[in-house]
Image (cartoon, rainbow, N blue to C red; front, side, top):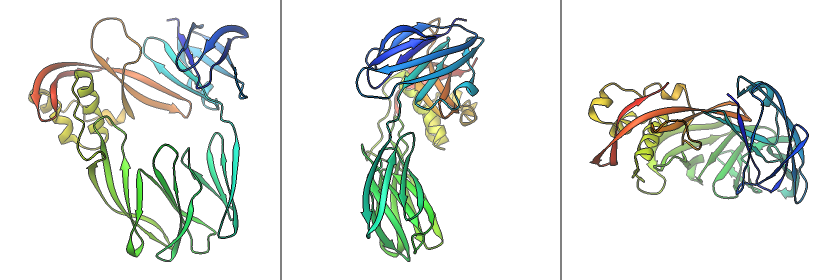
Length: 322
């Protein structure tokens, strides 16, 4: 099988493959190019504006990328789709440092491949897009609470003397309460709108979750209205640990066989199939990370039937892997 590489980038740039100019690529206009099914392929990206050029090597074997060849490919994110399609996004991380002070102590947020807060001799990993926090005293401990650009918040729990990190929490919203309690709404970021309402306790010894319950982040579910959306929602419900809801997307006969019980062992996400496979069988993609720079997608085939219910107008009547 001869693979095809699909190059994209958030900033339009020129793509070179094995030293030869292949064309221009951006997120809106990806570049498609065939590459050799065996051996090393050298990829180079030169942005048309700003800085951030990079070159990386991807080794193919039997038409598929070898995960170890991309394990340290900083600035490159790849998804291997069925049918020999490798989607490669070039996103070089421009390093930047933002300096500020907390209680007269110097602080800095360093952004690049990772986001790190440097504070009082500590290096605290933060979510991408983290903004400068405010320092709080809670129940004998300390906490740094900050916003995340684009939505969300984070809280880094510290020892009372600010010399040790004792916990880290990321959520859609974090609300401190009396007695060191924290209320956090965690968005599972799935298609139906699942979330968790969690209660955490911060103490000098650490950060402990004391309760968790399922909630709808939008106040109500967004039930799927297509066959593909129903299949994706069924897998997402199983990944969220909600087998009862997952069965609601299946026909009664299929639900008895519990066909999705092991789905969490083979994927981390369920996504629409972005690149078509031969034939007309309906399928969705089961995405599994191989390393920080490569994920693979496996097709999950299904057959759906119109059947109105409380969780949408479709039911899955059959599902299988190959």
